Each structure stands twice: as structure tokens, then as C-alpha cells.
Image (cartoon, rainbow, N blue to C red; front, side):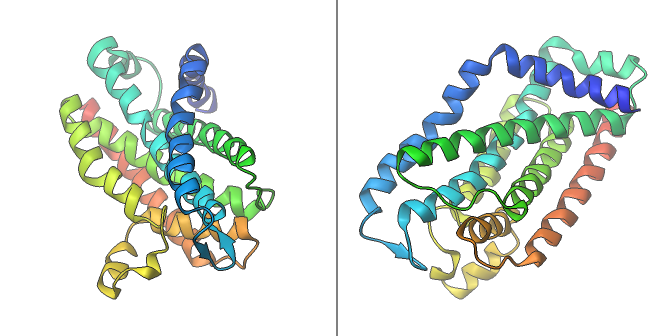
Length: 246
């Protein structure tokens, strides 16, 4: 199973390597625009828990980018299914559903990690340097990526067209990106809104990543919750692959 899992993963990495320059550029544009638009506009006037807004924004961008880039693996899977019929080849190959899902999820996590490194480099150009060397920081990113890469694989097996994929992104991923504690503290919102946002995985990811990067004590309940959600989505993805193969 290990060799088959690696084969699925390496296929995605070879595709990523083939278009690495375009990927790096696309991963850089949005964080750079956010840093310019919000960082300069609010950078000197707003402070949160003793940190500048730029210092507050970078961990939020890390959480958001790791979510969106991990989830973007669904687009590659859909293209492979609808146009190249790669999924049909996996059906004929001796690759188990678990190995297929694990390979695709790890590919999504890899993409997310690459986007995080790019954001941290961009932050250095804006003179933002936080505590990025802790296990808690990278573990929170890995769990965030694991959650949304697993969700991406499951959704890729359920959608029937790119329009379905775009609709889910518009109604779920995009609102979560802006409301999950990325650009502003969730505790500034009304109590009812805080209770609703508590159920969003990105809210816990943003909180964990920001606490770790600030060097504050982390709340491990957020890590546990992300791990549980990730495992549920992962096995849900395996179930969706089973149905797609039937």
C-alpha cells in the first residue's frame, strides 16, 4: 500500500513541479495584495494584544492560504476526472481507495505548506517576523491543511461539474476565508456570530496559528478539534471514492 500511496502522491508533485513558477506567482498575488491593502491602510493605526495589524494579519493569511491551497487539490482531481480520465485509470490499477485518498490529501498539504512559506517570506519584506520555529505553529498548519485537503477529495468525488465545485467554493470556502478570524478578531463580533463561527474549522486554525506565532500559550482543544474533523473528512473521502468507483 505504501508504494501505491507514494505513486499517487508523486504524480501530483510532478504536476506541481511542472508548473511551479506559475503556482508560486499565483500563491503570492493574494497575500501581497492583502498586505499592501490592509497592512498599509491599518498597519500603524490598529493594534491587537500588543501586536501591529501586520503581525496580526500574517498568521491569518497563513491559515487562509493553507485552507484554500489544500482545498484547491479538488480542482486538479476534477480536471483529471472530467478531461484526462485519470480516475478511471486509478480504478483499473491496483491502488486501494485509502492509498488514493492519502496520496491526494498529502499532495494538498504539500501545496498548502508551499503557500505558507511564500507568505512568511512576503512578511519579511514587510518587516514582520514572528515565532515560526515552534512545533505548535507547523502542527496547526498541518492540521488545517489536512482538514481541507480531505474535504477537497470528498467533494471532488461528489460534484458533477466545475459549476458545482465553484458553487461550493463561493458559498462555503470564500465566506469562511473572510469570517474565520483571518482579518479581524472573532471576539469583536456579536456573541451570536461568535457562536456560529465557533463551528468553522478555520476559526480554530487561525486561533491556533496566531497564538503559536505570537509565542502565547496555545489551546490544544483547537488542535484536537481540527484533528477530529480532519479524520472524519478523511474517512468521508474514502467513502466518497468507494461510491464513485461503484
